[in-house]
Image (cartoon, helix red, strand yellow):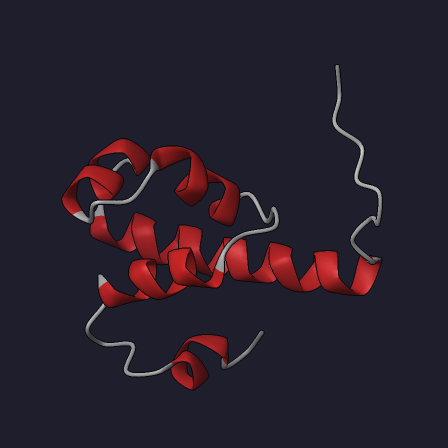
Length: 83
């Protein structure tokens, strides 16, 4: 059974979610860690993190916790440059 959203995400918003996921994927790949190792190291639920990378809807707290793993990203503004 496939879950169908009552209020689907607009194409514009999905484009943004996909761009966020791509940037998160690039950051993780720069560490050389698998999703599993990254999540264990940063105390993140693997499914929540994988959904973020995949450009699916996510909780802001998940994004904030992921960004805490990258001290070079000083703010949300830094992260969103180019998105």
